[in-house]
Image 1 (cartoon, rainbow, N blue to C red):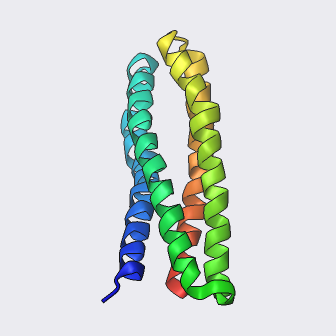
Image 2 (image 1 turned 180 degrees about the vertical axis):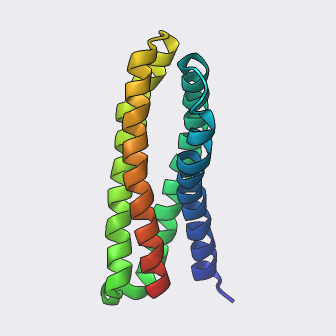
Length: 148
C-alpha cells in the first residue's frame, strides 16, 4: 500500500500544530505571565524563546510546504476552493513569518544584546502584532481545512 497522502497529511497537521499552537501559547500564556517582569528579564527571555520557536517554525513551514504540495498534487487543477484558499492563506502566513523572523526579530536580538530596553520593547510589540495577525490567519486556515 502507498501511504504517501496519509504521511503528508500527518506531517502537515504536525507542522500546523507546532506553528499555530506555539503562537497561541506565546500570545495567550507566555506573554501575559511575563507582563510583571522588568524589561531586563522579560526581553532576553522572550528573545531566547522566540529564537528557539522560530527555528521550529522554519522546520514546520518546510514540512507544510512539502506536504501541502504533495496533497495538492492529488487534486491537480480540481482542488476544492477551500483547499486553494487554505494554500493562499498559508502562503501569506509564511510571508508574514519571514517578515517577523528576518525583518523584526534580528532588531529585537540586537536591542537585547545592547541592552536597549526601549528599542527591544518596541520590536517585541511589533512581533506581537504580526504574530496576532498570523494567529488569526492560522485559525482561519484550520477552519478552511475542516470544511474542505
